[in-house]
Amino acid sequence: MTPEEKAPSGASDRKVTTQSLRRMKERGEPISALTAYDFLMAELLDQAGVDVILVGDSAAMTVQGLDTTVSVTMEQMLYHAEVVARAAERALVVADLPFMSYQVNPDEALHNAGRMIKETHVEAVKLEGGERMCPAVEHIVEVGIPVMGHLGLTPQSIHKFGTYQVRARDPEEADQIRRDARALQDAGVFAIVLEKIPAKLAAEISKDLDVPTIGIGAGGGCDGQILVTHDMLGLYTRFHPRFVRRYEKLDELMRSAFERYVADVRSRDFPSEDESY
Ligand code: KIV
Image 1 (cartoon, rainbow, N blue to C red):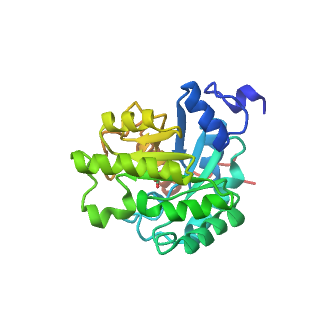
Image 2: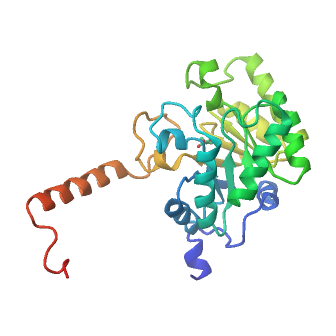
Image 3: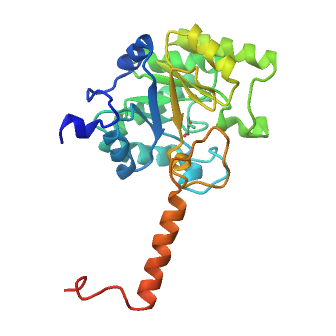
């Protein structure tokens, strides 16, 4: 595969690292990120020039059909992370640590981050939370495992929030997020996802930090953007937050293909002689 084929979006074909993300921020080059949970999707994202592939715990919703990300297990995330990491050549691959795999204490967080890196070959882990998670972040980063933070609407806390609405509209929560972002940077994260917070706040935080911010529903002032791939393809359609730009309606295309297949089998149009031996 030629470099042009490998990165049709104009992205350089060089391997993306945590360091190169930092340089992209310094140069003002937007970082593109999407999620993947399987080999084929990861290969397509990589070939399209996506900079960061996140093996998100959104797999709970997009793959398993659950209502929240809370129940996905460490073993399930290890499985998804391993198949995605095997497909990606250029993109930086980051895997979510699932709920309760890192919150109990820093040693358990380190143990599970270590499993994620050693058993799957992803290059970094992501965890949710601010100041309270900093001891765990420091512990993981100390041994050489890069950590991505995640602030704002942190889906693993959905039962505390009670709603998927925008966070940090009130000044106290906005101040807390500013403090959390600083604390995470000081603890050693290489990037921070900012989810569903006001664009003005996200832009301020992005300006304040040296590490890149990756926004989802956080406006154009972030250093990069991430979407759940199943959302932007129009495959996951249970709800449509306004921050999701749907690039295709794959649900319609796929449903139509399946219906035509069923009709062809029923009418004995499939298989034809050409499709038989
Ligand atoms: O799990 C996930 O897909 C995520 C993104 C929404 C950032 O955390």
